[in-house]
Figure 1 (cartoon, rainbow, N blue to C red):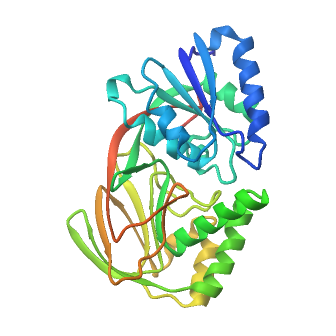
Figure 2: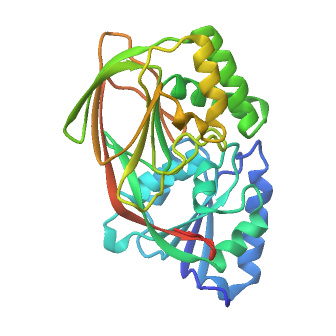
Length: 313
C-alpha cells in the first residue's frame, strides 16, 4: 500500500513523556518528516512545556489537515479537548505516536506503543476512522472515566509514573494492591442511566470508550469506540477487601464480567450525584476532575483518527 499524504501537519509533542524517552521520539519524528517530503505537504513540531499547552495548541490548528499527538494518554486527552473547540468542518484528523506509561487509547486503535518508527509507519499506511468521544460536564474523554477506587488507583499510578519512571500495568497492579488494602471504602450515589434510576455505593465505577484502562486492564472488554455507546462497569455490592482483591485480579483479562458483584451495560447518557460531603476521586484519561455531580454522554462520530490498515472496527 502506498503511503497516504497527511497534508499540512502539526506534531504536538511532550518530550517528557515516557520518563523522558519522548525527547528521542520527537527527534526521530522531526528527522523523518523532514527527510520524506511526500508524507506531508508541511510538518511543524511544537513542544509542550506546561500541562495545558497541548489543549491551547490544538485549539489553534485552523488550516491543518492533521494533528499528531506524541505522548501518553493525558497528552492525547489535552489535544482532543483542544481539537473539539474547533468547528467540525475545520477540525483536523488526529494521529498518535504513543509514548506513555499506559497507552490505553493506542491499544484501542491498535497502534504500536513506545515505538515511534512503527507508529509513524502505521500512520502513513493507515486509514481514517470516525470515533465517538465521551463527555463529562464540559470535558471530553477519549478512553476512560472512572470514580472511586478505580480513579484513586489510576491517579496514584500516573503520579508514580511521572516520579519514578516506571511504566505499564505493573504500576496499576501495585497501586491497586496498596489502595484496596489500605483505603477501600464506598461512596453512596444517585444515578440516572438513560432514564433509569440506579442507586448504590460506589466501590468501582468506570465508563469506557475503549476496552482497557491502567495499561491493559480489560475493564469493559466489549467497548468499541465507534458504536455510538459508552460502556459502564459498576460494582453492585459493598465489597470486602478480599472480594475487591479477587475482582481486581480478574480485570486484567476481563473475567470479572462474569461476577455477580459487577454490572455491565452500554449507555448513552448518565447523570451521577455523590451523596454527602465526601466525594470520591474522579479521573478522565488520567486527568483528575472534581465535582459533586457529573453529567456524562456519548458524542457519536465526533473525531476523525488515523488507525492502522488492519484495524478491524
